[in-house]
Length: 283
Image (cartoon, rainbow, N blue to C red; front, side):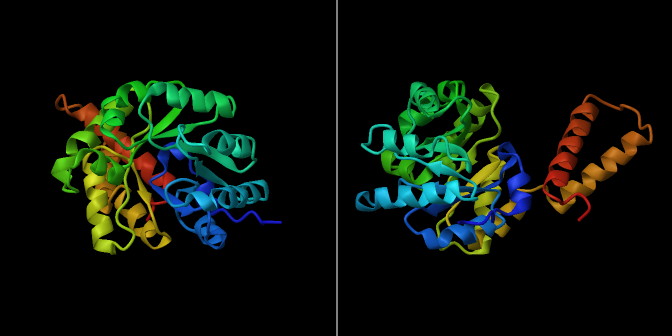
């Protein structure tokens, strides 16, 4: 029987605040435990993009065993139009370790709602938008019953549209997901991953773009990138110092001097809350 091995800090973190979303090839059972014990805020067992058709059933069995016996993760099921979608949901929906499902190639709101209904009441769905149609329907998808967060499938989106990977080329799509998430009352969206072979500098630079676009999470392809990603997606030391000074001044009875004071105070409180959640407030 599998022992409960999920990182305790990450397991206690609400998924709405997860920065790093580690995709794990479900056909490779030997990498499940390293993923579970890592500092990744959320783990996603991937039955879709990283698994060839001839390995789908074996991968699904691996996930069922893991989530029945102490592991905890989200599952990227196969797309709704595939022959595997229905059986994927039937196999994982009631497993004790399931946190939610990621639905690839989401293009219409009813795909999310039907997936949520087919699984079980209240099961959160990460809607992965990977096409021009998905991005253009982002607000409707964000407002659909069952949608928990939006995620951006950058590589497939680029294939669909012909865009380069330049941040300027993808700025519209990223901003659409951020605005749609706000319209739907969702947590900030999850950006696509850095390349699997990216070094720390590249991961950090990519995360800065993610943060700049108002996105609050990011997919990640390897455990080696998780710590850098978490640090880059957290309030910086400068932000924490500023927030601490702002809050101390407010507690000391500082007066409202202009119309920006209350928004700045609200931002300081948000930074303090996030820093405390991520264990950084006293760092």
